[in-house]
Amino acid sequence: MDRAMMVRRLKHLGGFEGNRKEFRPWSDLPVDVLNIIAERLDFIEQLYFRLVCKNWRQSQVVPLYKNLPWLMEHSWTYDDKNVNSVCRFHLPTDNRSHDTCNKLRREELNDLHGAVICASRFGWLLLQKSTLSFFYNPYSKSIIKLPDLDIGFNRSTFSSVPTSPDCVCFAIQSSKNSSKMLLSTCQPGDRKWSSTVKFVGPKKAVEDVVYSNGTFYCVFSEGALGAFCVADSDWSLLTDVDLIPGEMFSSRAHMVESNGQLWLVCPSGSKCFKVFKFDWLEKTWDRTHALGCQALFLACTSFSVSAEGETSGFAERIYYHRDTYSSYYSLETKQSYKCTFYPRVNKHGPERIWIQPPKI
Image (cartoon, rainbow, N blue to C red; front, side, top):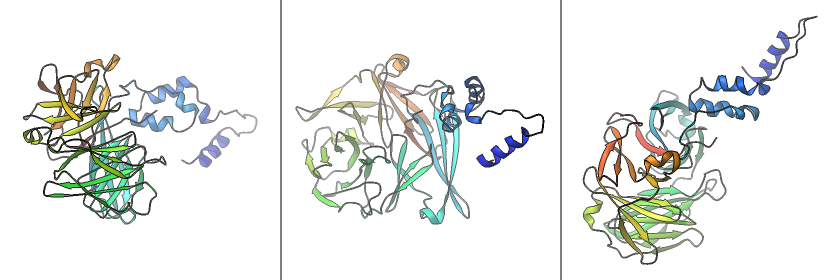
């Protein structure tokens, strides 16, 4: 029912001669009534409920760990006319889950069925299929298309919220078979990516990319670290080519930025990890056995989360996905454990990532 129809119905109900009643607009519902309605909704629906109008934002929401990422499963389905983006959010409390489905017309989005998630930041996803890239917000269902990219990149990420004017997308192609490395950038609204720039690389595969304070940092096999300054479009290799033994990179390594610090997490065996922290003075990766008051969540984009107060139980843990379940590795016990609050999924099911919860 649209707003105009609702107004006409209310006028009709209160317009009997001699029995005229005064009705309050929906936006003026008492807070206790709003809370009764909100408590019957799941968390995602509560977000939409609070967006209706200013007064409805006074309704209370289910208390959650605000700084912990959610586990999101994403898959594509399709029919004759539509491509469907299907998301399932698993909240880190009481095993709560919520499903959403966004129908996208194929002809409008060039058949995005099969696009994969390259990065996840600020509640937005960066997806790619062949030369096509686009931003997608699974909460608001907003889409921002990017120009076609003329290189097949290994890793990509972005600097800030895609709706902000300072958002920069970054893509890199690097291989152990060639010393030629390709970099390209663009901003939402650009008609094309910047001219692909060729640099002399470390002749190694790029493992991960993070953004911090105007610079994209790229870590390569054996720990070589490079930096691309956005303002100067300048590339520099910060370290020697080989810093960490090659066997540490039998599986993909993950780099995490936290308050200006860079952390490198390398799989060591099937359920163990070794952690390194970058020394900015010596330009080396130093082995560490503690994370401090934080937890790390590893995926296509990895997160560092403060683990103090109500989340102190998450400290010294590394959360990751393996096979059909999510696990965490404890740096204190040197063992891995299955998560109790993130559910088991199908081995060949949807993509799994960590995503930052929406701000309310």
